[in-house]
Amino acid sequence: MNLSQKVRAFVGAAEASYAARVTDPEGMRSTREIFARLGQGALIPDENVQPERFAVCDWLGKVTVPAGDLDDVLRAFRALETHLRWYRRDCAASRALPGFADAHANAMVVGRGGLVPHDRVTLGLSLIAPGTRYPDHDHPPEETYLSLSDGEFFHGESDWFTPGVGGTFHNTPGMLHAMRSGKGPLCAIWALQS
Ligand SMILES: [Fe+2]
Image (cartoon, rainbow, N blue to C red; front, side, top):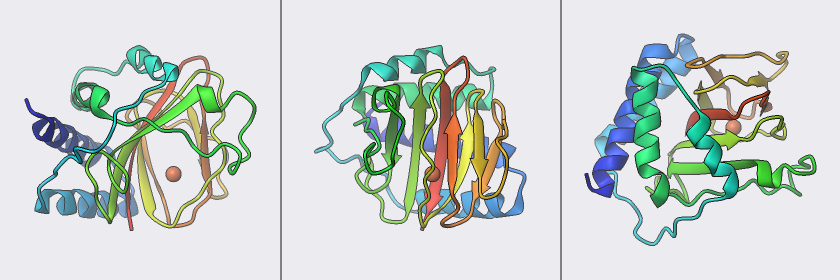
């Protein structure tokens, strides 16, 4: 499989998983629109992306999901991993807790600055080490998370909640949200559109 085909395989697996699992109307509408957009054009990897990874990325190997659609997503992501430029949040700007920088990494498969550049859609993954709180953040694009592990989230005025493996939720534009891991790593896919 060449890199384009690997990207297409990941996008296709993510689409199937979101389609099977999202139940709230706004998340369903948003993810349908996102994958329709991605289905319209060629997904051409940017050859100038220099792969980069961090030690925390080793936690990806500890993420386990049941056989089926989630495993398809995880396998397709792992097949892409060596091509991705993992990145960290700007920890100072987001007032992260000490140790956060080394305890998390994000990877963008599609999106501005991602492996496949796209102006409107962002599709990627966050990985955080056990016992780590991701800083509160918000952004203009709406977003639907697909959780691939245990771990807690909040959004808007909600309390912390656990979507569980394969759980999903939708963030409206500008909605404050965050996540935190427990005894294991937290791994979640996000699909955004503006
Ligand atoms: Fe977000």
